Image 1 (spheres, helix red, strand yellow):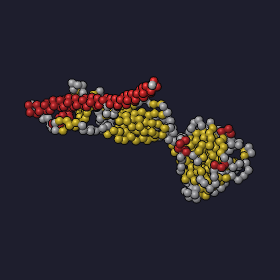
Image 2: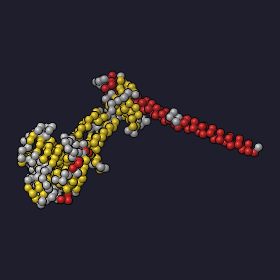
Image 3: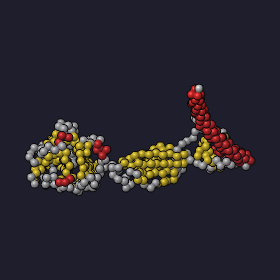
Image 4: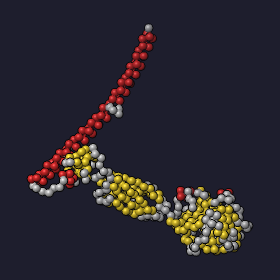
Length: 420
């Protein structure tokens, strides 16, 4: 008997708890749900404030209408059309008894409090019709022109009368001091002293009586293209240095067999540079021969401190020499350069690191490069055909299609996706 009563008591307790939970859920939903008491109370407050703001603004407009008729019929003044008169009077902000501010922008009327817009309307036939959408401030155009170390920005606003424009530039967590200008509907500004080959975020903010607007753009400072050649056709600023180059057209490229082209002017590869060349089926033929696809300087010891360029060795491998000595040579297995396919090779130096790239992949890097001022040689180097320290400085025979030289560095991302 005792056990049965305990069982009934436990069941009743569980049922009671479930009922209480259901009631709690219903109560919570009723109070704080989407259509609950709290939400409805908030909406009621907003509706009431909007109605109060519009009522007080209507009283301001009514006073202006009374003043208009007094000026026109009592004082016999030329006051123009009623709507225009109201616009002109409200162009200067009016404050109501409830501390609402009423202001016109053309035919649009805004009522706000503590800089927060409460209601908007439009002047029609001497009164304000509320709930009309008014013009908004927008940044209609933001154009950029980016160089090595600078970025120009051109900004235009829509409904930007009297706007205050703020603009700033950001890189890697650093922010330049914000610059501000007043009463501008368009602006051209130049950020200077930027780093080459870096991503920057430009933020433009504008604010006036029509509201606020923000726009963000990302730009990248670029390396300056010094020159680019299609080697399959003759170029006026390239000359035959050795042998007999064979021009086979823009697609087939240039065929060099123990032959070299050279630029007609010197190229300075010093603080920052990028050199990119497109080749196919490059080979050397002699024992201990090294032939450079593109180079500046000349060969002396194994790789030596006098060669800067991309070369192929007699052992079948390729490499990049930074011109800073044997320890700054980067080797590349010959298997990366498959036969009968065009390959894009690149070297770049950013002032600290020299790196070697093949078909968008970085092969390796070293920590130095030397200043080089000389002609660029394609297919060899200035002293090709000579032997020094047991190395025959020869020719990189094969097909050549494109060559580009930049002052400054292309980014890793640009090199990954580079194409001529």
